[in-house]
Amino acid sequence: MIRPRPGGLALDRGTPLFILLVLAMLLPAGVVLWFMNETVATQSAAARRSVLEAYRGQLRLVRSRVEGHWRAHATVISGTDEPERRFARLVLDQTADGVVLLNADGSVAYPDRSTARSPRAEAISAQIESASHLPTSAAREGEVERIAAVLNDYTISMSGADRLASMERLRALAPNVVLPTEAALRLSFALAGPGRPTPAPGHFQQTAVNDVWAFTSSDSRVVALYWTGRLEAMMHDLLHQVTPAGILFIAFPPDVDGDSEAISAGLAMPGWQLTFQPLDRATLDDAARRQTTWYVVAAGGGIAAMAILGLIVGGTFRRHLKLARLKTDLVAAVSHELRTPLASMRVLVDGLLADDELDPAKTKEYLALLSAENSRLTRVIENFLTFSRLERGRQQFSFAAAPPAAIVTAAIDAVPDRIPSDATVRVDVEAGLPPVVADEDALVTALINLLDNAIKYTPENKRIEVQVRRDGKDAVLFAVGDNGIGIPVREQRRIFRRFYRVDQRLTRETSGVGLGLSIVEQIVRAHGGTVAVRSESGVGSTFTVRVPAATAEAA
Image (cartoon, rainbow, N blue to C red; front, side, top):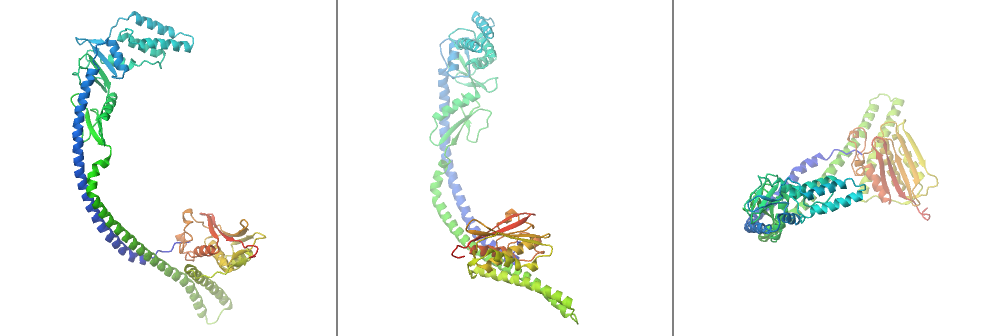
């Protein structure tokens, strides 16, 4: 389960060639892309300039339309009706956020600042005071609504100062009362003093109140007041009425920076600016697209051909590199695994030959060690041969009904010399198990590899557990568990790859080339079964092999 050293020699030789191949593909593709990009950019820029010039002409026409609109609006807000009623009409129709009406001599006609309280205002004040002492909330709400109806009725004559003062007292009693002209009255009073704005008829002027603009009627008798937000909304509605297809005109106040296409909104709106925004960016590129279609098609075809060729050559090259790495890994693994037992055997034989007279005890000990090294060498060679036959599809399986207990016993009997004296091996075979359809020798080989892994990767106090149990009616499970180092979750999908081993630090401490689990998977798959692993780092691992049970006829 340890990843071997990668095939450095093959990779080192292949890397420069791979880099050259990539450069050979990318260089012409880059030239084609650069040429196509320059062509498209030139054509698109010319088309955009043409379209933008047309839009600029429309923007200048829109500005003249805006100035005409405000001249007409100056006439609309003029009138000859009573100042108090005209104030209510302009506010309630949402024509303005506030209104200051002037007399012919320029004095304020409404809202007037008379300090003398009228009898009507005194009566309303008394009614509000009386409503505040009503015993029930329903009665109080009814009286408040009645008083509000009087204050909202501008046919009832009352000075602006009295009406606003009464509204404020009524709101103090009932905060949610509906008084639609209260805010307009307050704003109008704030700008009706001696320093009130006096813009020219049909023109806007910024007032001393932040974000409030004044606009004078054509007869100079009405000064309409607008919040900046209201003006933006009015301009939005106006510009949407004159917007041609594919373009949107936008107005913004003086405190907002305009873009490079912005122009003055005209004399009527000093400081305001107009600009445009295309609704469909494709409109700007339409002319360029028609002119560069063939460039794109030709360049795209060339790049596609180079990409396909590059994929084919690159895939072939990668396969050759992978094969070269596998060959190098195989040679390195074989060299290491064969050299180690052979070197040990040679040392033992040389030790025996160096003695003039053979010591029976020493000879017996050395022969036991030689037998162990021989077994180790045999296992390595058998694993390589088995893997080779499985990879080439040359492994012949002889399936027959086989008792699970006999398979487990054969596997345990094959590894006694590999189990340390301090290790514990527990075997639990469920009674009454059905036979399995298997090549008994191949399945024993798979279990030996699992036992070998459990022994190798449990450093000390080894506890190996083998369980065999029924899985439903049609399968038998062989489980081999240990209390070893475990396998990280991210590695559990890779451990069945050939030559793959998980923990690099164990490479020098354990033998093996990473073929054991690959052989297990291929054998189990050939039996129509599955192999799975459940593991936790530092706790241990359990490998479970599921093999189909034999039918009654086969048994």
